[in-house]
Image 1 (tube, rainbow, N blue to C red):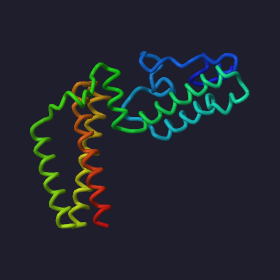
Image 2: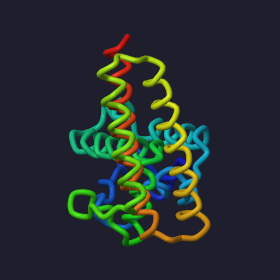
Image 3: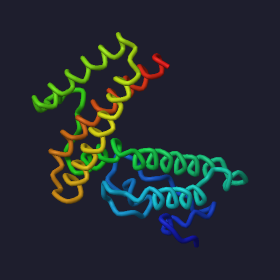
Image 4: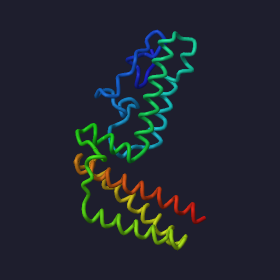
Length: 196
């Protein structure tokens, strides 16, 4: 029997069982990698845990197995990849934690934002428009710095809301703000590429 997050399933070719569907509550992405369900994640520990899981479930290990064993190995490997992609991204990890604690992000339907945040976004968009029109690299660099600062502040606020206060509705609002910031950051990067 192998040890690790899948010790119960043993992962010997004869003992493979389909992964729990993502729609159920257990095991969640954190449990899959054997790490504490927190927003603040040690990126190196997450990477090591991901590699351990992939070593256990990689489809190549089951190439000589039956079609069912290969299919189940592929399901587990896919689930591990999806979980890793979610947990390594601060935005996706925060959204995942909110959803797991009953605070859906609902970005498509819940567009409520603080007036100060919306005003700030309007001002940033106007500054981006002006910098694009002027093809001013220094202005674009300042906007990128501002985006980086806003991202860091929002991630710090998310860490506090999720790990210290356990205020998931507040965190869901911060996730929506971070989505705006990330999108704006992409627009600034595109404008910098055009100006180069």
